[in-house]
Image (cartoon, rainbow, N blue to C red; front, top):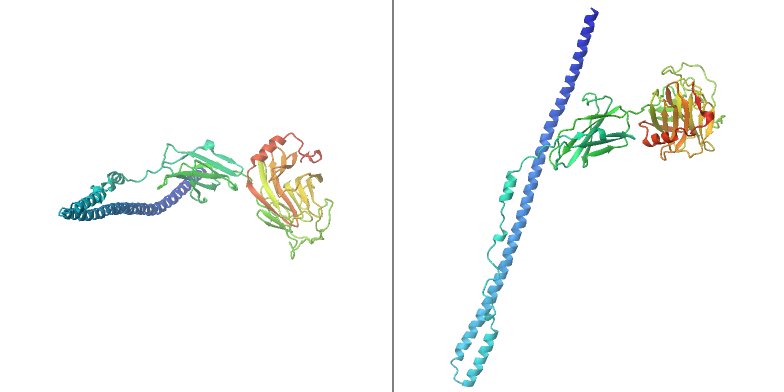
Length: 497
């Protein structure tokens, strides 16, 4: 009976898996069908545009050539008409001279005849008829303006569709994932001088291997890439992987996509745990803000008054409170008293991780660090042996210090606009950086024996936390150079229990 149930369960699992594959394939086919219809209409439209453009060019060429012929005709006509006019005037003058010479033959007086003969001789010498060129200045031949389209006709008759570009090949060895940027490199399987540009498509996923259609984000596109490499920068790695594929395009058609590749883009992603934060903190995912009115009208409310504690940080004093049922999340009470604290909702148990924190300009007091899960609800970051932080106090005078186990080390550095937190759990290092200048602010060296949670304290102001970040290359380089050097005070270095 049990064996039959197990066998049936395996059959059910196999069928469910096969049904999922078929459903996934159906969605792929439907998507492809819609693409065929849309792309066919698009190609017909582009073909009409190409032929309309060709007709337009031919019309322009015809008009230009016709104008050239008419200009040549007008020029030759004008030259010949000028010759005709000159010949007509010369002929008229010559006929008049001929008539005068004929009359001169009838003169009887030798002196008059001699005078007339001299006049005729002078006029003949100067007569235009003897200076005329009796050949047309221009030819009537217009064949130099004729066009032979036989070669072009053959080219047009040989016109055919551009070949579809082959699918590029992504060179996995040349792809790089670093500093929340991904560089993708590819090549064509064979040279193609008709390639105009490439299209890169990518999407985030939590699945390794080939892309899936079902339950996946849509592909995002980067178009008109002229080279065979492209870098996507400024990404937030809030998923474990990213899928990439590339297609080549000539001026008329796009080829098939390359075989997709999946690159790992793992980074620490967490939100702030608002369910266990201090009641005077307003928490929304990655933002926490001091709210002096928090908890009013509720039981166990905290009345805030400014005062100066032993740490030099002003904070409202805690009034006597009535008992209430604690808000529980993962067996944690809500922080209370002067512990204006909120923790991250994701534990660090191994590996190297990085996140950044930006404080509001008017924030009076805040701390950034890590703590064990067992941090007490009255505990403040840096005042226990289970928490490490740097603390900034902007009340009256600015103080900047590293804190652990209720000991403080004053830091000789300018308070940065953004603080980078680097945690190497296995290596026992917690470092803080100026994000803008990449300056190392402080390093705790210890041995972490329990899972860590990112921790934040804020009073009179707000903090924004940025996660999904890889450890920057600059930080890795600085860590290598700083290891073995004095980065933390001996009084703050310990083996955490």
